[in-house]
Length: 117
Length: 108
Image (cartoon, rainbow over the protein chains, first blue to last red):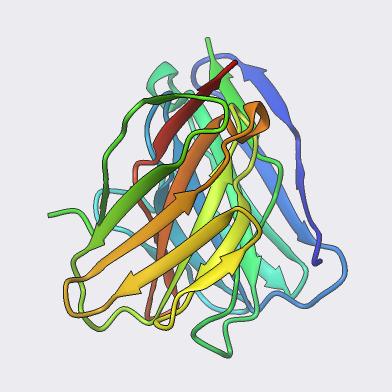
C-alpha cells in the first residue's frame, strides 16, 4: 500500500518556540493531506485539510495563524506549530490521499508526539 | 452534534468471544465508511471498508445501514491480538471524520 512518512516522531520543545512537522507521500502524489490532533484517550480531531498549491481549510476552532500549513508540492505538506504552549502538547498525525474519488482510503503517517515544556 | 459517535467502551471479553461495535453518523449524505484499528500511540490502520451490502474479511464483518445511519463491526473468535481501539470513519465530501473509538480488551 501507499506509504506516508511523517517526521519527527517525537519532539520536546520549550514554550514559545515553533515546531515544524513534515508529512511526505513516498510513492504517490497526494493532492490532499489532512492534519489531525489526538489528545490522550480521545479521538483524532481533524484540524485542517491541505490541498496542493492552495490555502489550507481549517476546521472550526483551529487557529490558522497558530497552526501554519504549507502544501507546496504533491508529496510534501508541513504543519508548523507557532509559539507552542503546553496545551499544544498532543499527538499530531497526517494522512494523505488522492481524493479524486470520494471513496478514497486514507494513508497515515506514523504521527508526531509533541511535548511542550 | 458530533459527525460520528461511538460507544467508547471498554469492551472486556475473553478469548474466543464474539463482540460487536456500533457507530452512528449524522450526515445522511456521507459517502463512504471505514473501520480503522489504532494501537496505543500509533497511527490508525485500515481494517476494512464498509459497503451497503455488508462485507466480511475473515473473522471481521462490517455492515452499513444507511436508513438508520449506523455502521457495525462484528469480530468473531476474538484473539488477544485484537486488543486495540477501533475507529469508525466517515468520508463526508472528501473530509474524513473519526469516531472517538471503541476500546477492546481481549483477555486470556
